[in-house]
Image (cartoon, rainbow, N blue to C red; front, side, top):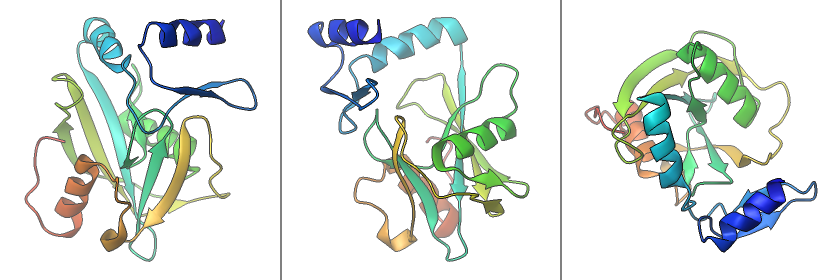
Amino acid sequence: MQKRFASFMVRQCLIPEIDESEDGMILLSPDRRSRLTPLLHAYWRFSRGMTLGVRGCVIDEAGRVLLVRHSYTPGWHFPGGGVEVGQTMKAALADELKQEANVELAGEPRLVGLYLNSRASQRDHVALYRVDAWRQPAPFVPTREILEAGFFALEALPEDTTRGTRERIGEMFAGREQSEIW
């Protein structure tokens, strides 16, 4: 069923190039955003009213930040994701860090700010947490969603680190004025 749906979406020119993984899972190209994204945002607009996500700036002992690269959207980002109905932001953060980078909270994360992510939608908001106390019980293993995860020095971020991620790093580590917009 999933293959037939993906095939239909490609024929309708709604999604970019696809690949099939060894287990038969359909993967979107990580270099381009799907043309299906605006349709999903329209669905969320009517089904959810407002969306809330969390991201974590995980910092290692050398002062490097953890970034991830997704299979479905270009660039490097802080790990994170959506807050589900009935879920707290901290619980969502813990779930996303575990799912995306095999990182577990070992202390209280600190809320850095709440941002309007108007590039995604006028209804999308992102809570950013700073995570200093954490552990990684085993090394990160790539998944269908997260292709890469790694710690990067502030002066050596990957070239395609997203604008929003770079701006938050500048605010937290270079003393830039904090924006309300992601």
